[in-house]
Length: 108
Image (tube, rainbow, N blue to C red):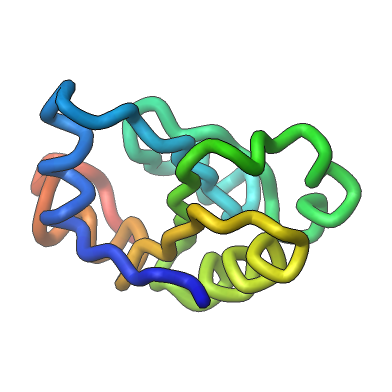
């Protein structure tokens, strides 16, 4: 099962040092990532995740991110099926992040 996380909850998580920071796995295409991204996010386009899954730490909390939350949900489900137990999907993606957590982030 993949947990859903809201932009405001992720922002709070990232602002506090009481909990280890998650890997912010941005699964959008490179042009999308270049346009806007959450600070510290790692770009790994959705299509490349299956061949690069070994690069990810299954013990670390991972928040999957895309534009609106659909592609990232698919990637999160894929990771969960591969034994990743600490996977989250950012509800609403970077669009929600721009609206709720970082109004200075460009949108598209």
